[in-house]
Image 1 (cartoon, helix red, strand yellow):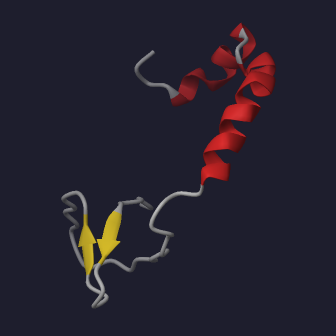
Image 2 (cartoon, rainbow, N blue to C red; image 1 turned 135 degrees about the vertical axis):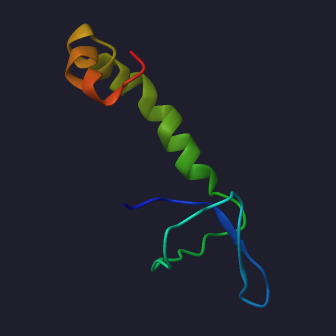
Length: 73
């Protein structure tokens, strides 16, 4: 099982998970160190793309094609 959990690394290198995680045994993990603040361009790019992508994504055929990934529907 691969799972992503948000964490904070203090100045001493100690990793503090921001949510409770319970595992049956010890597991390996990968740590990606991010900038303090997310870059503005990533959010802007997503917002600018939304209108163009909506033409392809907001269709009944798309809802049917992806319905197996939405168990609540």
